[in-house]
Image 1 (spheres, one colour):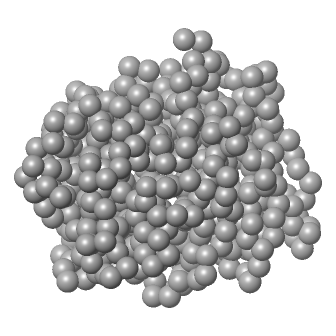
Image 2 (cartoon, rainbow, N blue to C red; image 1 turned 45 degrees about the vertical axis):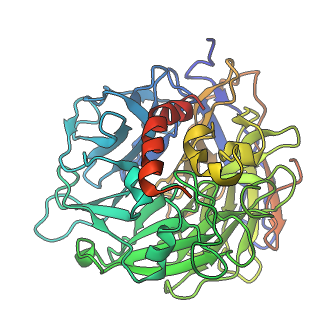
Length: 524
């Protein structure tokens, strides 16, 4: 299989100023790199240390978790392989503590648990963390909070959900580490009966949590996940879905740092509710972020129709100052055509947000896009979108990429019987507010499939911090790809036109299909 060399970079073009009311604002410019030795059958994640060291975790061509390090986001070198991997999957994550400690994890099929390691020497050696190998766990997310008095390292939080047993009682769980990820405490469920978020979770075993993040000013921890409910407030009108769930609600559930280990201390906030509209808000994520000023954001896809029709979805964002009331949605990418899926979001200074997602083209191919909004809190925000490269990341309809291949009562097994796209991609932001994005191309094209990294090198940043104006940009340009292009829109239109068996029986069937399903997702 021929791959572009690791040093091959996608050229980008500096665009004209995008905001007429902001003379100093220019569209972001990205340089995109294909990671040598990586696979497109992956769900890569990204993190950046306070000192500007960039990290990516993804999968190697043999399926192992593979970790890369960079000092500028442009030139990447693999570090040593985290150990104890038996049957690794595509579910990986990475975070960096203020001390420079790197924490990385992979969901291993041997026990269906998280094999987590940390490194204090920049990836030269790894030590396995304790307290993350509970059975029947799925889709881990990590977040780093402030360091508390008497604790040597910053706190680390692990979020996951229960997979097969979720057909009996489903929940999201958070485990807290007081020693910088060396060990984690007992996981605590964040949804508590009789609260509506808990009741919703029982309607369908969720496709998993969307993410976890921490307000660095206060230490408050927030978990975001989608649920499937019905217009009458119960589960009767909802199709039974397991593992891949077409959510129609998005919840943000939060707890103060002192109460993350206290059951019942997590408070839910309903950020998005499309139950009555009959629209899907999870493809497959609806993640959140908190800005430097304490504003909360949730990004989500919104379909034109209900399950199983995911096609034609928009990407939207809502925000809240108090986790009680939420704004009207801001449209990042308009609905129509093939649609949009898989959004991710970060937030910087007040009103400044960055996003990444997949945009569907007319020929049913998909491309990786990014967006920047500098005035998300204004009455009429402006959105700048950038196509990151010409590389095809997926092929097919949105419904097929979301695993909706079986109709009727048998659709319960869609998440295990059907091929589907990746669940998760990576997004991070450095202290200056420059975006780092990572995404897999797994369209079955031998020339271009692999894990890509897009680093912002020029343009207005998401933080007003005084920083160097640009990242040093190499000049190697491969002929296979075209420059990234940016588009500006006002008023919220951001994307240019370019584009019922018993639980026991169910669990038995899921157990039979789980191994094959994980392999299918790895193979894209």
